[in-house]
Structure formats: structure tokens, C-alpha cells
Image 1 (tube, rainbow, N blue to C red):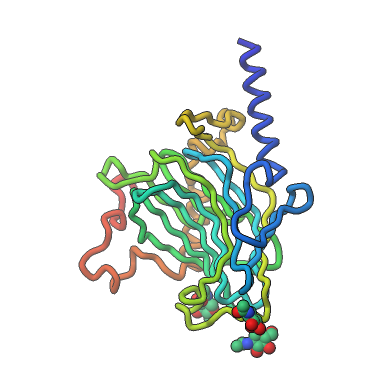
Image 2: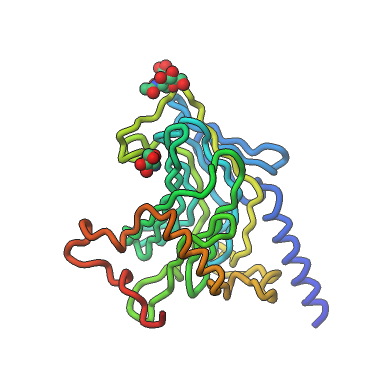
Length: 285
Ligand SMILES: *[C@@H]1O[C@H](CO)[C@@H](O)[C@H](O)[C@H]1NC(C)=O
Ligand SMILES: *[C@@H]1O[C@H](CO)[C@@H](O)[C@H](O)[C@H]1NC(C)=O
Ligand SMILES: *[C@@H]1O[C@H](CO)[C@@H](O)[C@H](O)[C@H]1NC(C)=O
């Protein structure tokens, strides 16, 4: 029916318009000191030792989607600061997909910490350094979360893939709608060289900037009904079916070979009694 199609297109384009530009359409601020600037084109989080940290949260919850955010991290001596950008559901058996950016002394590299929780169980840390200075400019950090896998990307380069292996009895986050969260907070007790380097408050307030959020996703309303953004679902690059092709797999291997600094699946000390089952190669690979 043409009228339905038109309505669908209008709906899809309005969803896109809402998510492409104005951050105040998608998020609200939490904590103290954050600001939405330039008519919603820019969002700033700030951290100091008087007001504490700040954050933001999405107004919507999502069950699957592709989420891109351009982030410019705290420059200079950012040791002790932690910037997070993550998806999480609620409750004790929550699911969560994390990016955390651990600051460092001027000139020392940031650590990008990633984790996946399913049914309340995490402990799947992988950490990376970046092939650029993430404080000089905005870079795009992306989650692709569909029914088959989760892909973490930086500037469209995949750094980590977490496969759905439910058929092998492993759990996968695919039942609980998640909210997008971000925060800038003080993690001086553990963040930089395991807590050896403390936050230097003379340099506060620390600031992280965000822009160009794009969410192509399935929104879940409070009544539990899900509506997927149909605009991209017909394109060949749809996030719903997106998986790594041989070229992106080569990039993934390049990143993991040269920039991965921690992988729980190779931490023999921690798992001296045996690695988690998902660390074993999938039969389908
Ligand atoms: C900070 O820099 C040091 C020295 O290069 C490095 O060992 C460490 O992993 C970096 N990141 C953090 C968060 O400590
Ligand atoms: C903290 O930063 C200030 C200003 O940059 C500097 O003078 C001071 O030495 C730093 N303190 C520490 C403990 O590094
Ligand atoms: C915040 O940090 C500054 C710089 O180190 C210090 O002078 C000030 O006393 C601190 N304020 C509080 C409330 O801790």
C-alpha cells in the first residue's frame, strides 16, 4: 500500500533526523557540570573535585542497533579520569556492552577498555591502545549489536567481535532492552597503571566532548513494543545483518595484533583453573 510506504518513509526519516543532529533529542544529562551546546550539536561532560562527574543517558531503550558517537577525550594529563560510553539494561541479571577510556599522563597512551555482560555476568575484558591520539580530534566509536554478534569499532575499524554462540550453550545479550549511557568520572583508585597515578585536580575541570550521534536501531517502548528504524534495513550495509567480511576481518586482526594490550582469553594467571568456555574457538569458525 503506497500510503503505508509513505508513512513508513516519513517515520524513518524523522527518526533519522532526530538522531543525526540534535543531541538533546536523544539524551538527557545526569550528574553536575555537563552541557548541551550549539543547539544540540555538541555535548560536553566535565569532572572536577568539587562537583564530581557528569554523564548523559538516552531517552530511549533499544533492542539491537548500530550506535555511532564522535568523542574527543580529555586532553593533557588525564590520568585517573575515566570516560565511559556503554549500553546497559537494568537489574541484577543485566546485559551490558562497554567502551571505557582510561586517561593517562600527558604523552602516555589512553587505554580503551571493552567488556560484554550477559545475564549479569561480565569479566570479558579486552583492552586496546589506539593508533592515534584520541584527544586531538573527534573519532567515531561504534557498537553494532544484532542478533548474531556485537562488533566494537573505532573509526569504522573493528577492534572486537563477540559472537552469539547460544547454539553452543553460551549466553548472549539479546532479550533485554538497553539504554545508552556515558559518563566522565574519577577512577584514580584503579584507572591509570592500576591506580598508581592519581588524578591531578589542579588541571580540572576535565572535559570530554561528543557530537554526531547516529542510532539506527530498534526502539523498545515502555509497553515492550519494538519498532525498528526501517531506513537502513533495505540497504546492503544494514546493521541488522552486518558481520565482518574478509577485509574487515583483516583490520580486526591488525588491531588485535598491534594494539591489543589485554585479552581475558589469554590471561593464564587469572584463569589458571581453565578459561571461560567462550574462549574456546567456535565450531563454526
Ligand atoms: C598509561 O601509560 C603507561 C606507560 O606507557 C602504560 O603502561 C599504561 O597502560 C597506560 N594506560 C593506563 C590507563 O594506565
Ligand atoms: C599537577 O599539575 C600541576 C600543573 O600542571 C603541576 O605543577 C604539578 O606538578 C602536578 N602535580 C603532580 C603531583 O604531578
Ligand atoms: C580540588 O583540587 C585543588 C587542586 O589540587 C585543591 O586546591 C582543592 O583544595 C581541591 N578541592 C577539594 C574540595 O578537594
